[in-house]
Image 1: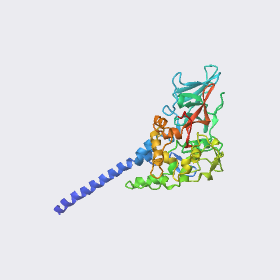
Image 2: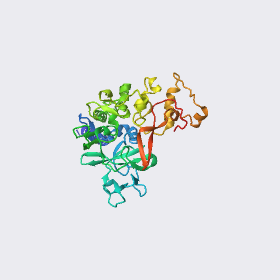
Image 3: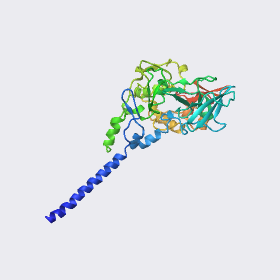
Image 4: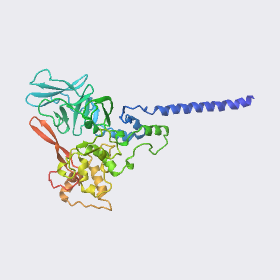
Length: 408
């Protein structure tokens, strides 16, 4: 009996020890997961989550995406997100002979304060609550008034590193402009309109998913995250919308929602269109697509791309052929040039540049600079000084041969 006990006790200790070990490891693994707590909910019931839950499995992709203009297209205003300066001599702009706008940092936040005729007391003090735009070209600022959202008159223009009058605003002191749901649809993943009308500017302040994040393109991630947390050894993505499963037009439509110029909405509301839907069922162009004169380089990259010979002769070319939405690639011309050559230097479609060899060498064989130059926008003009207005330069997506000698 004693011998049997001597044998049984060590076995029991091993079993108990192993159980404790696996229990601890299980708790450690569980602790590495971010709780699946929604930060917002779509009116269709879809839940939105913080992008942090994606870092567990897609660390590099998420970290890269957090730096993109898409992700940073709408953010709460703070010292890190506001690009304009609040330092003396850099924190103001002259609207006209009577009005100067001052940007003021206070303990309670950041404010725009117009002063009339050098009076000491500002005409008003408006808090910058939200930042629209990553700062690549500029930023605009929104103010909450209870649940109503308004655009403030002062904006920031990156090329001149200065405060300016907001695009489209008069050169006189003007009321803040109401922000409707269509404005937000292209700058954030979701915002709940509580106005009862698509023309209203009242939103649920705590039901917003800021920026264009993973869920805007990959749809709901609830089941995907739960499945892979419970099945960490599974390497095949489950319960997630994959771009490879979409048709070419579906992929184009996902981008065209915001990159095809002004659109006339049907009876559907903003944020109703979801990736994978057919855009023509939700809105249609508010212009004649057949007329290139009506397609502006600002905001209508889709229309210009469709008009390009490259697009017309290809069965696969779409936005993601050149743009990786997960990464900040702006300014990496060599990267985009290589993407041009990947198609044009292929064995099935070899292309030889017929341009002036001296000039092409001077430009380091820069395909993009020649065939997709920076062009003045017809719709986006900035008042940089009281009596000076400049057009914002945007890279055209009408791929072609340009004879302009001053290409940028």
